[in-house]
Structures are given as C-alpha cells and as structure tokens.
Image 1 (cartoon, rainbow, N blue to C red):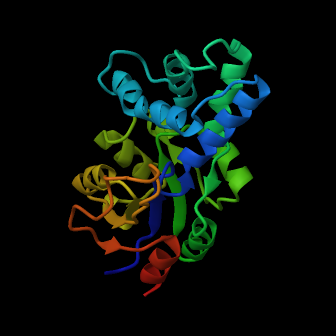
Image 2: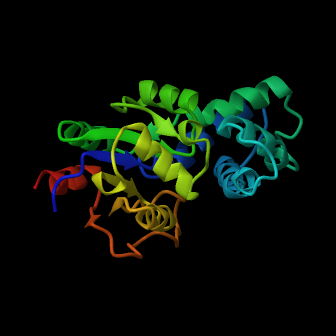
Length: 235
C-alpha cells in the first residue's frame, strides 16, 4: 500500500479525552457554586446529546450551526435537575467552552508529530474552526490545516462531510486516510472511498465501555495508539 498523502483524524475520543476534560470543568464550576454533582455523569449526559443535536442539522430541520451552539443548547437540559440547574447564563456559556479545553491522550502529540513528517495531517471533526484551533493551541496538536464541519458545512457521517474536506486540500478520496476510534465514522469514510485506520480508545467512555473496543470493518490499518499508527504508516 502506498503511503497516504493526508491523514484525517477524528478528534473527540480519538485524539483527546473529552470525558475527563468536560468533567474537570463541571467539577470546577460546581466548586465555584458550592454545589455537589457527579461531574462524570454530567459529562456523559452532555455527550449523549451530541448525535441527536447534530441530527437536527443533518436532516434539514434547522440551518447549519456550530457545535458551540448545539452544546450550549443541550447544556440547559443536561443541568436540569442537578445542583447546577440555577447557574447563570454566563457560567453556562463558560462551561460550554470546556469542549475547547480537552487534553490529548498520552500518545497523541508524539504520534501526530511523526505522521506530520510523512503526510498532511488535519482534524476531520464535527467541531468548528474556533473550537479546534483553541484545542490545538492548548494541547499542542500540530495540525497542518484545520478541517471540520465548518469547512464542509456538514456533520459526519454525511458523505459531503468527508468529500468536501478531501476536495478542500486538492486530493482524491483514495489519497486520504481517515483515522478514528469509532467504527461508524470509519464505515462512512470508507463508503466515500477514503482509506481507514482504527485506533481503539477503550477509556473514552470511562469504565465499563462496551462500544468500539475492536475494529468492526476491514480497515486498511489497525493500531494500538497513534504512535503505533505512525510506525505502520512509516513502513
């Protein structure tokens, strides 16, 4: 297999640990208000709204909006019934930016840096430019270019999400490899002609995770983490 000319990376879960990062900011907000909450449960509930919120854009029920807008809208329902239900709008806005402040997995930065020496590397995320830029600056993610829902004007797994971003960097689908910890993301990318690489993140959803523990498709590469994937790409 010839090396890919570009690698696209899912971000939430594949490159960064969203659950711990969001829970950290929820816990800090609770401490500020003297409230007692299960911060990880709130993070999980918030993430559970991710796909339903994006579906309202995918199915045309509303115009395209950024993930910040969707996260902020869903936060009100997530906080209802918790000790943070009464926090003011300014604090809810600040908490929404928790998704900009996520930490990379221990192997992420080193793995990306190695792959960057061989190919174009870019996020292909449902996040928008400001979110991904802020995250990259804080976490040290060395992207060549930032791609995502904002450049494609579509949310994964719609085909146009993948194909428009491939076209944006002047390549053909077979020249690009999609890297993700999520089987559904890779299946959608493969259907669009992209190459695929599966990197499991068994701690993404915390203890007891039952999904995406193993590859569910015939992917081009399967790696233990991003440093391992870099080694495979270099061969």
